[in-house]
Image 1 (spheres, rainbow, N blue to C red):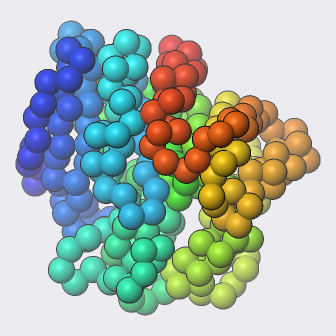
Image 2 (image 1 turned 120 degrees about the horizontal axis):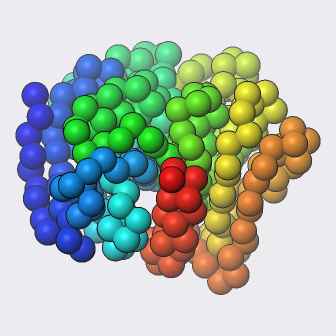
Length: 276
């Protein structure tokens, strides 16, 4: 069952929010969908956005200012919630594990395995649901921020041929080597380091089957830069694998949506070029 719970005019199109049942996650999920004005008359490509820790579908649609650029380029924007939620869904007494912290992986350990199958959701179930709309062309790209940047990179690398391009803001590029990823992976996947590699962009890029266009923006004043993000590890992995990477270190910018809103127009234009 699908219910539209928000419907707002925005840059000639519509910013909607839907609630729908996810079989992969065994709960109801909220998803922001922006339809540009071009969607009223023809098919449009879709850019999926994955948000970071503690976020819901609301953060991106209310703070990034992305609808203006999506309207300019005729792109549908899709921003799902960051984890399963609701009564009976496992949670933790911390911001970086449990609800709001799904990490876009498929958990294998209890109590997480029943609901925390975010990779199955964002890579398969969500696109099937979105692209059943006649306005969606079936051409797609993916982007995200922080935990969602990790999610975008991993989703694209694990699913060759499904996305035209991938970009990220301040991504967790090597979750198996930093505290945020280590504690989440241990909880969701257990202690097997080989299992962790399946969800680590720096590991996946070594065996990538396609040379997908990859753009990463990172602020040099980001408070999480050295401890959690470490973009140099992605640069090294891409160089070793011969994988293309445009990594831009932006002076003075932090981890916030002030950063994202500054450069989101460039990211959407970049994806539009690759989805044309």
